[in-house]
Length: 106
Image (cartoon, rainbow, N blue to C red; front, side, top):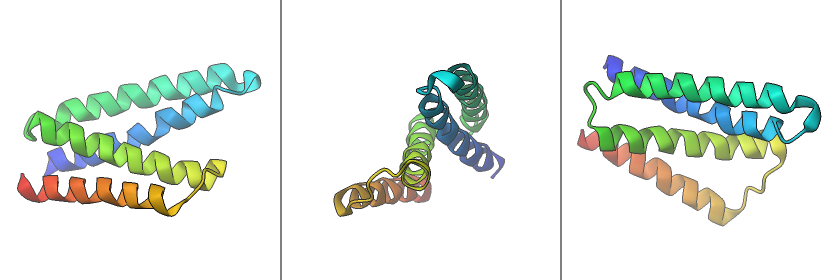
């Protein structure tokens, strides 16, 4: 159970680095954004390493990237006005479905 909590934490941290890179696009906040992205990457990777002690690597990686992808999608809509089209939403729901199947199959 603890490994799945590590994996959830790793996935949530995975959302932070694309936000950091978005912040880095502004010259006034470039270095803060880069530092934020690197910090989130490091924590995310460390938690993923802990999760992989008892979760198969392929499952852990797919769930990790799925959480990050869905989270970045939602953050983009909420924070940056990214489009929330029907097709994009269906794609994200397919990612969520895949993550659920992987979790149930472990």
